Length: 107
Image (cartoon, rainbow, N blue to C red; front, side, top):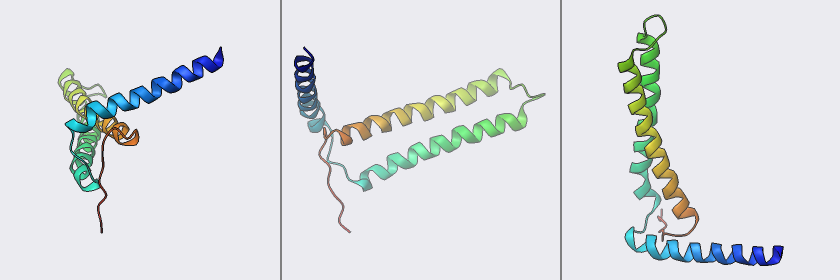
């Protein structure tokens, strides 16, 4: 029985790769590291803003307790950062799994 399960899982993986490549590759351009730099910078800026906001909240919090508005602002920064990290991770997975053509940069 385990061999049948293994075969099924191998087939599932094969079909998942084929289907993802078939759907994703035509929708996205070939990418190089240069194409990814703006995205990486955007994520880094969001991370910096989130951490900066935390430090600002800590600096301004009266008696160590942040105000609801400070928490809302911090939450907004976190949501932005986490959304961008999640999207960047999805893009990385697409590249790692060979769902997308990439091009090398010569230099």
